[in-house]
Structure formats: C-alpha cells, structure tokens
Image (cartoon, rainbow, N blue to C red; front, side):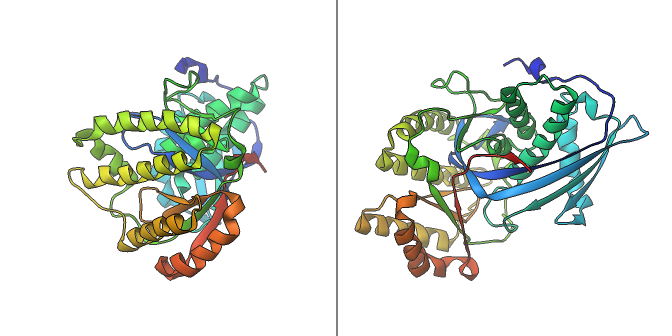
Amino acid sequence: MNLNAFISKAATPVNFITSWEAPSNIALIKYWGKEDIQIPKNPSLSFTLSSSVTKTSVNFKPSNSENFDFDFFFEGILRPDFNPKLVTFFKNIEYYIPWINGYKLIIKSNNSFPHSSGIASSASAMAALSLCLMDLENYLFPKMSEAFFYQKASFLARLGSGSASRSIQGPVTIWGENKTLKNSSNLFAISFGDGLNKIFKSYQDTILLVDKEAKSVSSSKGHDLMHNNPFAENRFIQASNNLDSLLSVMKSGDLESFIKIVELEALTLHAMMMTSNPYFILIKPNTLEIIQRIWSFRTSQKLPICFTLDAGANIHLLYPSDYKRRICAFIDHELKPFCQNGQYLMDQVGEGARKL
C-alpha cells in the first residue's frame, strides 16, 4: 500500500475527548528482527487476548501554541518517565497526522494486568493510544471508512511498538508481507478473516508467572542483535514457512499440527537469543520444568495442551476451552508451585479493541 494514503491533512484544533480499550496479544509465529522504522524481517501471527487490556483516555485541548504537547498519567499518577518513549512515538507519526499541532493532550492510561506479568503492555498501550488519535481524525474527517480507520490505527500503533499493530483487531491477526495472503503488509496488521476454525475463537491462554523481574535484555536490544546473528536469514525463512503452514492449520482445526508449529516457534525464538552475540538466556529453570511437565501431561492424558513463550521466562499455556476444567486442575496441582508466589493469569482469545 502507498504510504501517502496514510497522510492526513491539517485541521483547526477542536475540543475532543475519547477513550478506547485495546488488548494485548500473544504471538504464535514470532517476530524477531526488524528494520527501520518497525518493519519486520518476517511475518507474524497472534492471538488477540480478551481480559489483558489497556484502557486509555485522551483529552485533546486546543492550545495557544502551534506546537504539540502532552501529559501522561499511568494508574492516575503523572509519569514523566514515560515521556521519552511517547516523544519518539509522536515524532514517528506526526508526518501522518499533521492536525496534531496546536493541541495539548492529557493522556490517562491503566492496565487490567500487573506490571512484568509476561503480557505485552506496550502492544496494548500503543494500540489504545493510536485508536484515540484515529477517533479524533475520524471526527475531523468523517468520510473515513471503518476499514481504513482500523488499518491506519494499526499502522500508527506499529510505529510505537511493532507488536502493537496486532492489538487492534481479533481474534487472530497477521502482520508482515506473506505470499499466501495478498492483502498482508509490513505496514499494518490484518485480521485472519473468514475461515478461522471455531475451536480457535475461544482458545484459552493461561499465563504462568515464572519470573516477574525486568528482563536482563530488552526486546528492542534483542531485535537489534538479529542483524549479526549467523542463523538470522534461515530463521526468517523458517518463520515465513511456519506461518504458511499455520494458516492452513487454523482453518482445518488440526490441533496436533498447531501444537508442533507453536512450540517450535517458541523454542526457536529463544534459540535466536542464545546464538546472538552477545548471547543471552531469558528462560529460567522453572520455565524448563513447566515445559517438561506440560509434555508429560499431554502424553499421558492425550489432551491438546501446548505452550508458547514471549521474550521472557513466563509461559503462555494454550488449550481449547472444552478442556478448561481438567487443565486448570493440572495447573493448580502441578504447575502453580513453579510460578513466582504461585501466581498465574487466566485469559482467552478476544475480539479486539473497542471504544469505551
């Protein structure tokens, strides 16, 4: 798609208040490695979550200045320490929303999930903020189509956090150019669309909190290290091929193949970390213990349970809703002792962002 399509026009500032809720997401096909600005080296696919959300309200106030300014509140507290990341975000998007000049923004945000819980807060936060911005743009230029509204929201969110592009719609989204999907793009995420097998529309995600400490290596640094990783090019090819396979699986509902692809992607992500220079390890001993117990349980009980990992030690346990009772008992009896303070979060696949 032509980037010029996303460039808006200037407009006279107006008073406007809006609030949006955007979910986090968990990638099944992993995005690891990027180019400037936030262009992925391989396509990715994710489940949109339901309960793990960021709620953001923005009060757009016309100012006497021709410049742009903002105050950011998180959980009711003014947080200037978030400003550098937000300044970078607004610098990245100002070319596409020139109407932003002449405003003072009061941004208030809060999460439904605790900090350092293995849930991508930057994804949900940037998605919610981008939707608030698009809500005002839609007010200023009301002939915008709904499809374009969500497409540009994903485009803007990507410029704040790559994975945020996948937190606009649901239940399954794809970001990155892919030969199988002609409408796929590196600029924004798209919805899976028709054909998604019904079993995935209520899939469960239990997040096992193995380690709630800050990561020793940030995701941004990890992405950068892929530039010199000797296995990077093969990894990008593998991810694209796995996505092609998973697209077919998510139509057929073949859970055995789903499990193989999802777990391979999780382990390959961490293999890339271990083969970077400098190398690093984010998984913990309890992460490995939980994985071994998941495999033993799956073999003995013949239940379609599997795991995925984000860039950290915490485990996302994935399973169909029909088996929720039995698997929750397994979590409480066998996996909970390996979680920090016995903590885990229950979530499931959701439908995407919504206006509040």
